[in-house]
Length: 299
Image 1 (cartoon, one colour):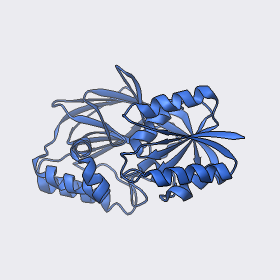
Image 2 (tube, rainbow, N blue to C red):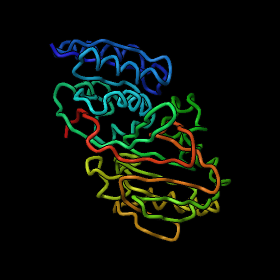
Image 3 (tube, rainbow, N blue to C red):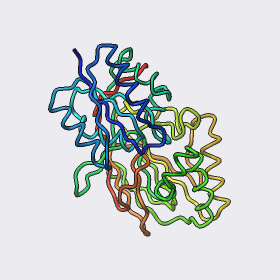
């Protein structure tokens, strides 16, 4: 019998005990011996997934948000143990980019009926080890918004809580001088946000930055946005949100580049986030890890 570990984050925006057990029972009826593990802290998902790999499980399912998902994914990198995403957080951006159903029971069915897909991840080395992102890491406005949005508001308003925080902080945001080294080539610009993407959709499936961005191309994609007034911030936000063609290119306040290794240095300190979780600040270096993670998808 195939074995799976279901990791659940009880404080995520859309998780509950009843659904957790329903998912496990559903997988059991489909022939998967499923154990449940509930996190109690931010490092638990990584540790639980590591123990599951050592015990010989065939798959790890994560019922939570992007932070819990990537914590578990860090222990699956380079293994053949498949990750199944069961959305339970606020954004669930990786699940959205991979077209995983938002309903937990439909998402659980992906483990049974889906196919294995190997995707790239982004990686940053920190004193406590490697940290990974599946969708994007960002410095500046987005990291500040992620850090200042309260958990209670995320549970109550979902992604709308992030929009409310964005409108609150935007009037005080200003650009700073940035030096971004992309595969050895220097790009200098003013920016209030530096975004390095592994997936193309920052609000799936509505907002795609560029059509060629893919988590299977062995590359990461850079977007910087300059903001020196509330109007410029709204203009940049609208330029991204109204990007119907999915083809953002250079403008006086938007810069774009592709590569495999990025070093970001800023004149003023900017906070950094990985898939929505605060992760230190500038300066930092990230690189792509090609074919890092096996995930279950319908496509």
